[in-house]
Length: 115
Length: 116
Image (cartoon, rainbow over all chains, first blue to last red; front, top):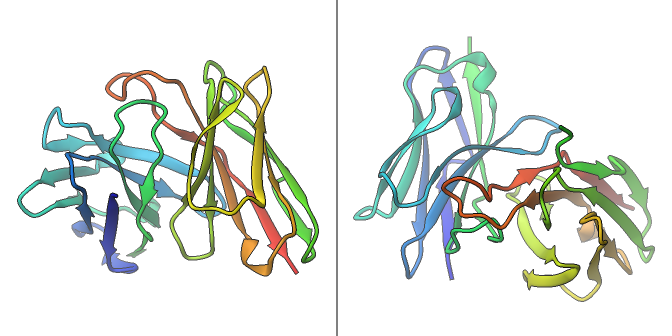
């Protein structure tokens, strides 16, 4: 079975500061990893995905994540936070690389951006 | 191009009642998955439908059932509602392609169910 753990249910940064949201995974086989963002009263939007092509993955809105097998991590970063980045962020894992995958989500990290 | 649409957006039920939630997938998608997101939690996979059959199921009791219609739309039914069923129910659609180019999950905005 696979799982993800998101360290820190709440993260607060100042506008313009580095954003770092942590995700560690557990999987017996190479996983496929995702970061999703959820704005208030909305569904989930895909930020980026790791599907074994490259360990450093760039996503939308200036976010990127690096897959580190030795650390079983897939942390999400953004060099400079913007007020519009305030949202809930979810890390997810699956063992299936098709559109018929079932995702296992972490419990989420709420990002606050202070002016 | 309409994305994933869900109805109703909000509803209130009492314990023991039954509820039906509906989902229309994004154009071109044939696979529909349902997720339950309790307050303050990440989404949990309920089940997935394609070719009008349930194909995968998460750890949810039989009170949760579903259906997929020939036009790929789907329903989620929950019987004998419990207080703990209060949650945001998310529908996601996808096509069966490989993730590198296609096959991404597109989520609707959800149906928020409150059980009193």
